[in-house]
Amino acid sequence: MLDSADDEEKKELLSDADHAMRDNNISDDDIRHRNRGSKTSDPEIVSLRPPADNDPSDALYKQEYLKKHDRLLLESKRSVLFFMFCTLFTAFLRSSRENVWILYARLFYVQSTENIAWLLYGGTMFSGLSALFYSSVADYIGYDRMMVILLTLKSCGVFLECLGIDFSLLIIGYLLTALAVLYVCLSYISWILPHKYAVQYTSYFYACYFMSYLLGAMVGSLLSFYFNYRLIFWINFAFMISIAVFSYFFILGIQLKLERKQLKMTRLYQLIPLRWNHEQHQQNTFENRQHTPPATGADTVPPEEERLSDVNERFSVVMNHGSNTQKYNTSYFGMRSMTWIHWILLISILLQHSMVLCVDALWILYYNVYIVDKFHSSIVVGASQIVVVCVSFALGNLSIPHILTANWCNVRNNKYYVIVCCSIMLIGMFGFAYPLTNDLRVYWAYSVFTGYVSGILSMTMEIIILELQPKEYTGRINGIKGFTRFFTTANGVLIAGLLWKVTYNSMFYTQAAAHCLELMLVLLMIAIQ
Image (cartoon, rainbow, N blue to C red; front, side, top):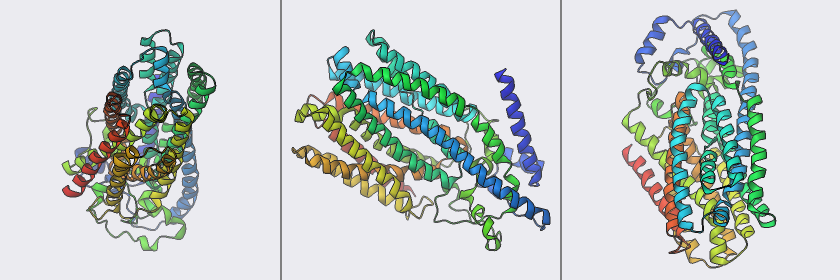
């Protein structure tokens, strides 16, 4: 029954697309040309040209559909909030467990931090490989369905951690709970929203994500301090079941519904000419940076239509419909043509972003242990400083999108200089300031500074990723992002754990080394352009 319903939905979606094509006077020859592989940077943008004749009925159509477009935009934003809610709450719960996971394993299972480090390494590597798979599959089956599947599996994993009968159950549970819904949520935001709002909501999401992740660490520390470690896992299980049920009723099926509605905006986009602004954050930036669009008469656009004359205000589902349709006719690993420079830039920025997330993971896993082992202080002090880092990170994350201007992925791009400056400052903090400071009170000031700079650094990289990635393959790109993040994090966590007996500053030296690699990669990006 479900398969037949899915087939009907797909047929209806294709039917809507065919009507949209006919409404926009797109011929079968144009479609066949696209299927052979158009050399234009974005076939959908090229096809959305203003009509030659001024039909009075067009004015009525535009007036009606401009209102529908605004309502549809609000509906799309609301669906994104559903995804964000599930992802943020899941991150909060995982953080409350992960913050005390090493101490929990020490108490019930393994006494050696070195053995636990190897377990975390294997689990994190599994997370990366699985993210590479399920995020790519989500491009085909839908981000909403993948979200429900992952939340169900994570609920089962938490249940196994709660049982705690033997160490093997803890391992299986850890692997299931390591499935990250983060990349499914990011893919959905990038695909369902116009690019301008995708950048905004990604900034809001990352700020809230690290807030929830690090605040969860604080709550987990308090519960473990006043009660016990096992209680945290049972509370997590109850809430995970609730989130999975919520996703089934409010998320499942929402993507196809919105895609059908957005495709009906195709004719509206065809009637409103495009206006290009190279100073804005734009989609498919690298492919379009040498593109000089023809004159479209955008200077005569009425005020009520001016907003949609910006390509960044238009739905990605419509703008990338041609290449998205071709995706289903190619092999699983097939992607539209990308130059080797484009690939180097994309992989380099993904690796850099993974370095920042590796540093954040080291904070969560080892900072409490560092405070307890080196300063013999309370776990609450360490968790409180993590929250300070979180708040500062959120502020830096929210401030940077409004500061950055020029894009087009070239050496004049000020985002690259932001990355260079932030990397140098963080190398100094983790390589010298933290290890040479023996006063715990100074660490409060360090937490503010490192958190704010890290927030700026992370969001700057995320903006570049949003500009470089092909929209129809957001799941696949986020899968690669997840793999690089977990691969980097696994090795960073392993190195810090193995060197823990040598020096408690191993976590800071590992963080400094990650930022050194990140600095080398951004200099490579500047050099090859």
